[in-house]
Length: 148
Image 1 (cartoon, rainbow, N blue to C red):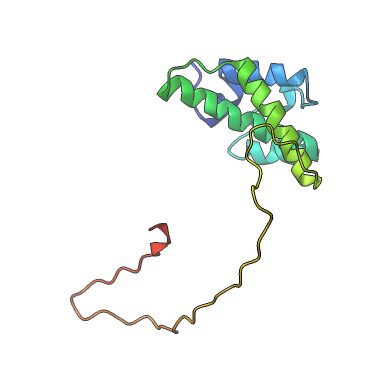
Image 2 (cartoon, rainbow, N blue to C red):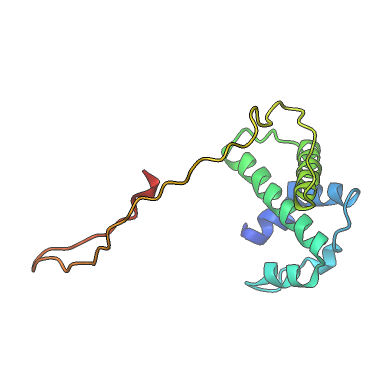
């Protein structure tokens, strides 16, 4: 039996293969024989051989294949290949338009209500602090609190 590793999840899993086959009808993708596991760096080697469009499409497919696998393991397992293919086509279209500087029609009503308003930037002076060694017998732990 094949190990369920990362390669299996995005390439060999039944839904991953079905998604790739479905997307091949729309996108130019490398042949499956060119998408083999050649070791720990198979992703980098595969992407290096692909052109820019293929790289983008492969990354999108692998991302969505991982989603499908997670849906099987942690969800209800009902996500379909058809829905994933439609999602990827829409996502790739939006991505390409954004990269080209084009605006897309807003079908979901999520565009800005007001035009950009420039706000005056305020910069607070941050005091220069130096790290101080803790007292003997104590441990000091510095934490980035940006997550709060």
